[in-house]
Length: 370
Image 1 (cartoon, one colour):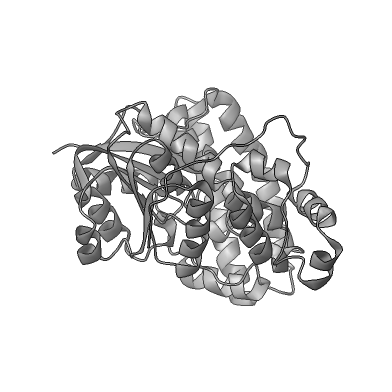
Image 2 (spheres, rainbow, N blue to C red; image 1 turned 120 degrees about the vertical axis):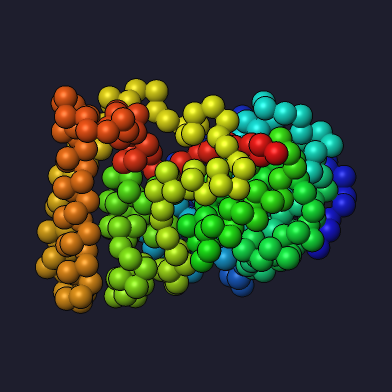
């Protein structure tokens, strides 16, 4: 699908914002005509103007997301899921702004892999780039098309699997590639990274955002479903745990690898980090270490509760207990090495500890070397 209408969009400023997304949706609904509220309020949600301005989204996209999310209103992750969807343009604009600090955007070819709601694609187009967004989910591409149309951006959207080398080659080469919150969902990580590298022009930039399954905060509650310790489990155990606890409709995560493993695969394909490997390392490393240490007691409490949860099968309980026990031992041993003189390897440093356990989602910018 190609949408080639020139971009035109303006918004007012200074509107009050709601504390909760759910409150904002309710208020937008209350402001709508009675017959809309009575017939199909979720499907015809008029949309709160302040909410749309906060997230830089248009009416059609906001309405569609509100209707799609409506059945999940009672879920603990509802605000998180809704906020993630609606913030696509804000997040995309920030990513593109940062990439533009490294090389010019105007006239460049840009590929947004796993574009979902289309925020980065829209941002690239608004910056004057030739934007292409791909996703394996036609439903998400439909939302991206609404977003692109609302923003009147020049974007090409396509149903392409990043693991399919042939389809990726058909797209050509790019000066910028973004791939946010995608890598953990693919079956073949080496093939995915190889295809991304092959699609980059020499000197091209690759931006990756990858959830860190060993971050203490994600062990307490993963970013996709709010599930305790699911990031530590092998996939078969995770699938069973997910089904038993009914965290969501489907568990579509395949793997969480280490930062070192991702960097090794990228280097093999001729892609190396720009500056520090992780762009979003906290400024105060000691405070980050203290936060991780403080979460270990919470993790212990959660595994104690899971051990007596009647909704968890013996097999799942044993897998959780084993994974959490090993994780706690690993982190506590690393804390001893970081704070003491027992640094047995060059990577036993506060910086490495924070990258391994204190950053929820690694933010990487890398360049093609050849």
